[in-house]
Length: 637
Image (cartoon, rainbow, N blue to C red):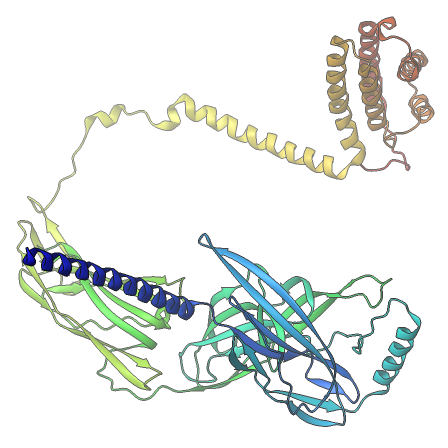
């Protein structure tokens, strides 16, 4: 009994310890999860910048402190210690951006504190690092240099004018900032190279980036400069405006990477990467409440970059240097390890890496008894996903098997120059073995070894005569030949007259309108017939428009000409008076129907459409007999 009680007590104690350990494990898991989340949370960025780096005496400029991140909690007021400028006041703004990537939402908060600072005496001053405490963690900004110059007369006059405007205008802002003008530091085009001293054929990556504090509408590249002394490969070119924020020399800009290229100098010496032009449409903001934004065309040019090109070090003649400069690797592959004499295989040498892989020379292949290496085919494949110019070049050698037996292709050493180590590097590809069997066909190798001759069965293949050739009917004796012979020159003549007609339609306005008149009346008569079947009043609208277009085109009058001008033109061409009266009568009836409130059933549409068709046929017959007289008042439509 006592033993059973002891076991029960032991089990209860064990169960209690197990539950306690489980709670500790859960707490430890949550604690570690919190640490991991804090580690992988987005880094808080604190930076400072000014609106311009050079100001006049007494001029007011803006100094900004910006805090950006996902988990921004409590932000203490920044401490401006040892500030060499007068602080006139500050403002605070907050913005939030939400982005969704791979169905995951990210919210970034940006807090900006703007100080209005007033410059004092002339000189160069430094805004010291500013302490910003975020979530009880201290952050320091970078120092910024400010140059204070003598205030010009125009600046003084502008300040006085602004003070008067602020006193007089009820809409004036009470801040101390002055009206901003578009300056050279507000927008510029900058070229940067990853290196300025290189070896011949060493890759130089050049980035062209636009910096702007103004609003842009259009961006167009200027004329392509001539990169004299360099081989150029394009890496990137912007196809849409997607700005990134960047602080440069203490000022915050919207930046856009316009273009990235890889240059390979082909000669020794000192060369200059030329300037690149960029044409921009800049939005100039309104100067007052009553003014409007304006657009100004601006051309900016990148800075030229001077490049010094050093010659490659001397190399031993026996080394298989192929002219490659960069970081590379070499491999080889044989299409098959066996074959018969007279057949061929392919031997591939692959050079891959970063550098001028597409400008390399063909490697030297040693003489191998029993094999003949022909001129290789070259394939270049570029790695489009890389930010550098990288890829591979494959040399595909056709190999002819001339002798039977076990033939060994020896190891092949290939050398290139590595600028990072400033030394030549070499790689040796492995040797290959080919088992060549003797072919049942006789193979004769020529003295030069350039080709093989196969003799199958016998030495000479005699010409076989065919008696049926005597009764063969040639193509020129067939009917199809003579049909083609006749149709071909006729088609040329038709095509020639068609070209003449098209040119006349384009150059002769009277002829063009005369041809177009028939198509116009057919179109509107087709519509009128549809309306006539439906007994619709719109029949008369379509008939009137068709008659007007037909007559103005035929008589070379302006579209929409008055009826009196049409009648006068018909009289000048001596059209029958009875036909003109009939036309006048039907036009009067059409106008009456269009503007009357009478019931459509009171008019005989079928009779009217017959009259219109008769008038048009008679007019076309009469006008085709008369000479069309050009009118000075005719207008081209």
